Length: 268
Image (tube, rainbow, N blue to C red; front, side):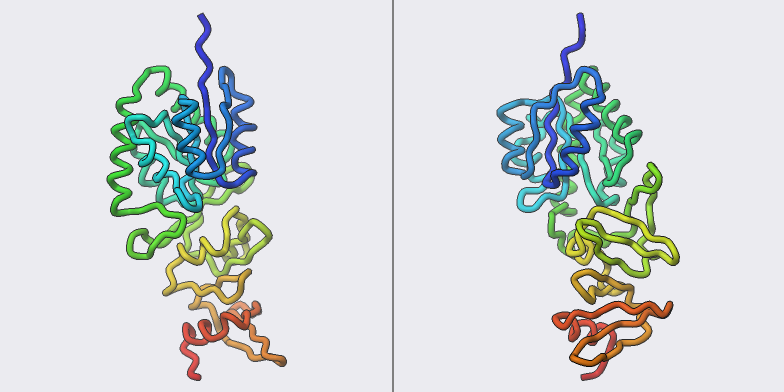
């Protein structure tokens, strides 16, 4: 008798992320995609109504986060869950939990297949009790280490590593190697020496997650490492630039000029 298909729900506030997961699932045998959700409230309703076997659940969503979804549904009622996150400290905390898995954006096909295979084995073995115990442990940790869309500096440590995809593989870039960051549409470019790494993340989120002792946002499209700023240049018409020790110049927006001056110790 053939195995019943695994019924899957995909939850992510980014359309491209949802499409990527559903495309990868389309290549897996015995999978029924029940649908997608783009926010936490819809996810809770879908989990309760459709009762999926497996959920791909984004951690950082505006409003109700992935962990909020688990809290609302309840660990005892949650299906097998693969969390999806852009920040690797959440993943590092969970990789040691045999019954749970994380996908760190951007993830490659091989990493997806590994996570899905683990979830399939868990569901086939009906080891959901173990999974729920691990979900409960994650929630208990979340009371002191909240995974909000807008993390607070007291509750969540600053980023130490950022996962980036290079040539089909995921590489971890230490934050201490980043010289500056620039925006490129929906992406951010991490500049480390002569190399540039592309990630799908907002400048606002990166600004909140980087240690302000070392980084300052000088423009809506630029964040720089304070120690690498050599000169603050005043141009005509009230325009400002910072010149890094490498000689590179980046614009400073007028709305951020005073903050940049304060952070650099420039006397009024």
